[in-house]
Image (cartoon, rainbow, N blue to C red; front, side, top):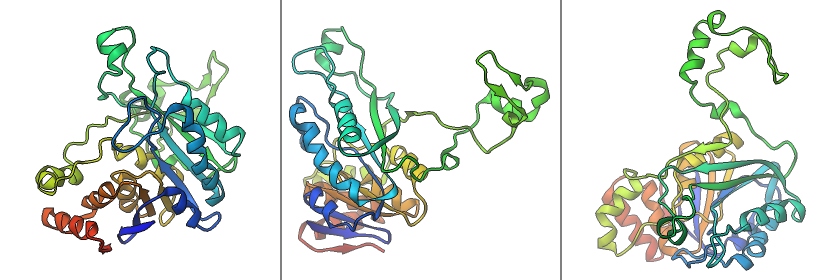
Length: 316
């Protein structure tokens, strides 16, 4: 395990995430949020396990993570879907992960989320583009696991803008709204017309993964070819970790990403005033993730070259 660089709030490591997890004190982490390599049929550059061994592989991390989370801590895992090899039939690996973590590792399923990425390309090609017998897969399952039944969380931190109809109701509630019991049995009181600063979000997170003008990609476009490196191919958008970090943590809490890739989680945690620690197995990905914390193109290039050469960088 090697520390590659540090910032005011965090530290980025390269190596085995199991080793990193074991190094934490018991009940010291507020939130672990990560997107592990999915159980896909086709091998990826960033590494992924076969479906048959995936659940037991990921469970190794889940077991250690459980003891390292604080009593009110959470583990959030983003998992994409997959098909069985050679068949237009869905794999159940992500649901087997859910059952394994809850039935055998002791986690609670605090809530299931679904990340809807409207910009996702049609796939798999065999069944969608060529065979035209399946629709494109645009949703990832996101499991919010908790150690206790009541983990730290506050939906007031993730309120969304009111709809136009709700704004009209708030402006003149007497005209658009009458408190009464609805056919469903719900009794809607006068409090329904209170302005709470925003609406409660749903567990369907509509977040397009269309990053194009971020600092990370901006520097890659300018110096990636020169350095002979490529950006991480499976980055998740900043709004995804941002939602859960806001919901489940407070300032100066510790956020950990054990499959950090391009370190989107670290960047978001830094911006929100949370302490963070990230880890990835691929040195090039960790080194180039320093772009997210570099002031300009020259700074990014210099930091990357120093890290690759074995120098520990401190960014203040």
